[in-house]
Length: 146
Image 1: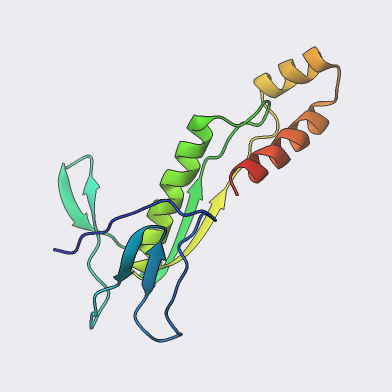
Image 2 (image 1 turned 120 degrees about the vertical axis):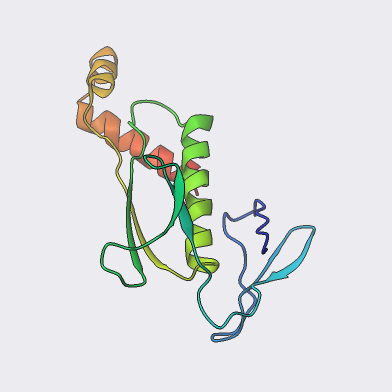
């Protein structure tokens, strides 16, 4: 079995040290280089079917190598917190594994909720338009997640 070890990196992504067409190699602070094992075909990905409690082969909607993924993002009415970072980081790690190890082409779209009861309440408390409040905290969230 292949084992994938994830680590945090100072700029949020591991530096790829491989020329185009060569096996992927990643390094990180204080870590030895890791190279994707040579493979003649893409590794098999299985997911848990929660209805049947069985592992089934992962298949894209189109049967191609393209994965289209929508994820819920934050409701932006205040400063980012660890829950935001945990969600963002967790999904980013999964995306990287799908791309780097399983070799899927992933299109990931994340929404940012900019109209919600919490946003309206906070904008009323601060005496600003809800759009102004949401744009401010959206920008702060994106900076925090860099």
